[in-house]
Image (cartoon, rainbow, N blue to C red; front, side, top):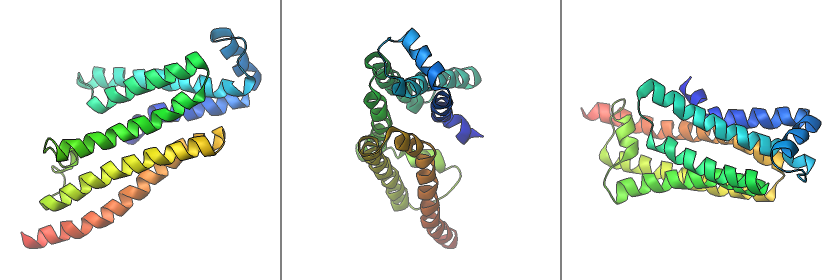
Length: 204
């Protein structure tokens, strides 16, 4: 359930893009009414989906605040990036801004993970998971670096797909493509960790 909530803006973006594509005339009429009259019809689904993603992110933060009375820093970062680049897409009618959003968020996450450990000596992955699993110190370091590198590579892959393939291909890469890559990476990571979990139990 939590993963669906975390993916709320992405799911809403994908759904809005698909629905607007099924009703091109209505979608075009909507964006020409609220944005500009000279917007090409084929841009309407992306612009509508971008707006919906921004609204979904705001809604996500409101729900988290009402439930916990605090909002995770990562979620605030996502809000700033999506409103800035998503807003630029709506203002300039250029999907490239929003396509960069995924890369910027992933690279920021990767940078935060790397700097938190290497600069501030605070392993964020360890802080999130050590209540559930026990691992040797070097493994925590490798795990944190692996996630940082994964985010950097995923951000680079997003740019490659965004600017070398069609818009529709990029939308499917964003969802469910990225979700599949996350699951695949988690499985590989789980196999790696299982070895060290067994070793840790043996050494106790």
